[in-house]
Amino acid sequence: QVQLVESGGGSVQAGGSLRLSCAGPGYTYSRYCMGWFRQAPGKAREGVAAIGSDGSARYADSVKGRLTISKDNAKNTLFLQVNSLKPDDTAMYYCAARTFGGRCPPRILEGDFGYWGQGTQVTVSS
Image (cartoon, rainbow, N blue to C red; front, side, top):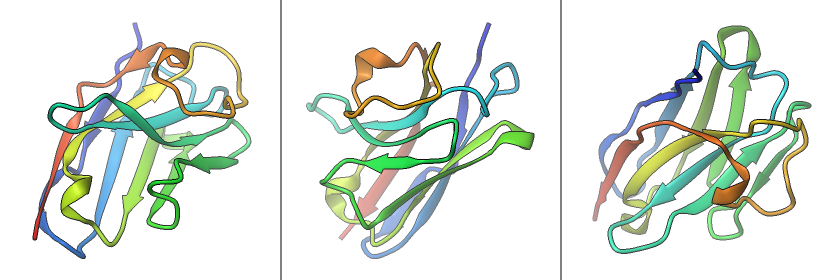
């Protein structure tokens, strides 16, 4: 059973930064595509970043330039650095992992990921 556990969320002022982490000791981070999603109240879950087995990253256009996804394969940990936070970034952030394939699909879609964490809340105040 793969368990993904996010941490690092919190309440910050606009313009601040956060680094989210996702630990998953039962999952081989080096082998598969992994991603970060977020869901704001009343909105659909959206994919914001993904990273392939080779370390290649892709981002949603809405967050490009402010987010950086990375991973430490040796420590089975995925990261998301979020800079220049805006109130619109307020959401529950989820870590997700694919069940096959090291290459990430062209679009970061919820249905392409089979393992999910429980989420970590990010709240940005103006």
